[in-house]
Length: 491
Image (tube, rainbow, N blue to C red; front, side, top):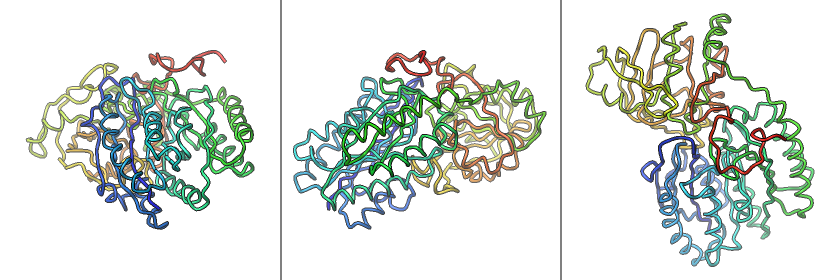
């Protein structure tokens, strides 16, 4: 069996002010995709499965980038210009199936549904209209009816943090194998919930998503469906289809699939009004930390969530730690400009430098500090946890770009040159620092940090600050999202 493999992976935060250009994407072609074997990514999972099933993999093209701002239209067209001839050639030589690794929440300057666009274009290629077309998706995909219509099967991650990204590829490949051996192709049935979830409400250990996932698995078993998918959605992409959605991959009659979708729709609306996630004001959070003194304590800042595309250099939390020192604190900021300025300084030198506050107008701007330079590194590290959420994006080898570790009073600051979400303790450990030794750890995330940091921390406070990834959905300037939708509109 010949299976074409391709990847287009980006989570687009349309509220971030800077655009994501072609240069922001890591790109690979042909045999370079096969070299991903063993890196613990979803692509690695597919390649392992393909070898086990004896498939011949036709490696096409891989474009992937870390979450960031609006994608230039040119990126989509460039991707298609590379995929199309490879696909046409493969179809001409006798292709048996197509396997795509997608995120599902990408948006370009003029296209709010790039994944649906690509799936539709694939189906328009002569000879590809009836091929099994399987795609895996991030749990935060903003799935569209067009995506569901053109895909034979959409297979999403089921965990947030995304500890099952590689396993999802294995699961999807098993389903594709059954399809190929049986000669029958399932159909995907779709329903949008009309619910918008802030990222902190999408953790699969939390009540809403936990209940929906349990119901989906029950419906899957009882209804004889191949897969029931849940896309929690990515609220920081302003598109018509943003939000929580459900779909059924099945050979069953449409009426049975619709019944399962309606059950999920009803369950979601019965639970969503009871969401009780809380964000602390900075002053109140610091009061609670000082009162409870359960260390290490996390101060989690979703509004500057690197894993959600935010710049990762907001300074309000750093300013608060300077003004109210509680104990040893660790902060990670993405600031390539600061790192570059420190490159020629000797280790141990005290340098006055402007840090952070360069990536968003939500922030008051850089903080000018006297810091002591502790170390300079190349920024590469291996994941401590091979099932880390980060492996879903780039595998187990991570590049933060050149890094500098500096000290200001009791605050240790890791400055990176490439935005790197706090999803694995290897980020600190690779710099010779054990984060368990801090009293306070500042985290620019919403949920994805939990697997790494919860085991080493005693308390956690999610704090409210302004930013492009704010959990306050009413503060965001939605223009394209289809209305009405909860909670922006009355039920």
